[in-house]
Length: 137
Length: 144
Image: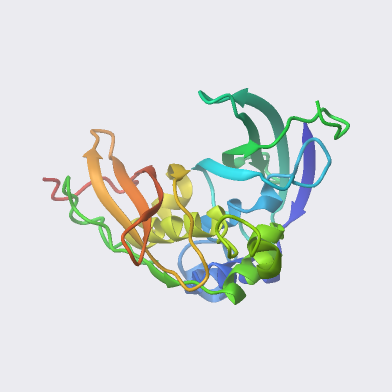
């Protein structure tokens, strides 16, 4: 299992919202977010869908030839500026019907109030399997 | 946020789509912010020797457009109850224009909504396809 702590900043949310061209005002302006009932600027739900949120639990760079084939996401609460998000990722492997290696990364994100804000499951075809030390199996 | 569809929910109803025009600068920007800086996304020279001969758009970036579509159509309810399960069945490239699609597939008794969702390119080739669902806090109105 791999664990990481994220501190959510206004700049981080803005960078993501700009990158995905989701320019809704609640992702940029504090007063608009407060008027909408949030404590501060919130992140688009796509903020949960980035590789940063799926750290490789084997501790090595993503292999060339890795193909992202499927993604599952479940959202429970918006992320807000100032949140501390604890991310834990567990990795496993399966074989598909063609015998290819399918790497599965399951990430759970929990905020500073111990509330689960999002769960995600990422499926990738990978050229080879590795062990926890990053060595090919 | 806009809550475009919450007043009238009909099985078969189309969601308001999102249209995006992709280029290498946008791919690079997403790569930096998301941490996915693999050569297949950001290195055109490297990609000349790959089957596609060009860089490819991140699956997560095309999926983000589905999330935006759900936010536009269902507002904050998507952020607290949304579920997404999509497969990446094609690729988007720099220069492509993509459009999201969504159709309400089921309306459930517990105020749940299930939608077929997709992202397609300018040639109507599907890049992403799957299911999105959520629960409406305020209940449903004028359900047909």
